[in-house]
Amino acid sequence: MANFLQEFKAFAMKGNVVDMAVGVIIGGAFGKIVSSIVADIIMPPVGLLVGGVNFTELKWVLKEGVPAVTNEAGEVVTEAVEAVTLNYGNFLQTTFDFIIIAFSIFLIIKMMTKLDRKKEEEPAAPAPEPEPSAEEKLLTEIRDLLKEKK
Picture 1: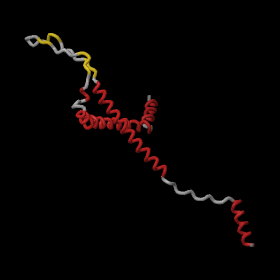
Picture 2: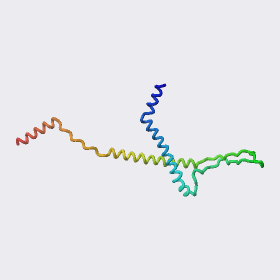
Picture 3: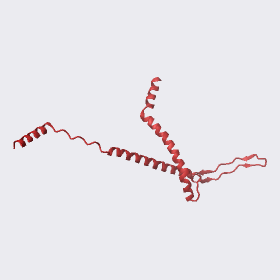
Picture 4: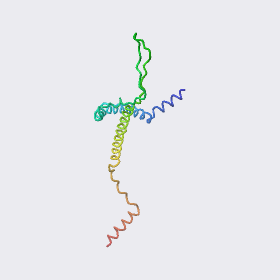
């Protein structure tokens, strides 16, 4: 059992697992921020443009609900039946959230990629010229000696 716990500790403390956990937590918080932006800032003006519609309330009623029936004494004779609805407004809202989150992440990754490219494109210090080989040195000395004799 102790070996199992040590293996689990080694696994949990690996960099990739910790990085992934941080990413999930930040992603969840980022998702809430974007959902708030969509629901509280973007969708109200869009709703006004399409006639004051609140997208989360859009639905198709597949079967009407039935209210509870009570007698004169206030006793429930028949229970209320909820309406059966297809809530496509929630789907639209979630789709808008997804599109904005995906676009935001795309922009962030694009910006990070540009920053990485700029780091790579920075000119490196010019490489020093290679020292001439022994043959080149010898040939240079011979050339210089020949020039002196002329």
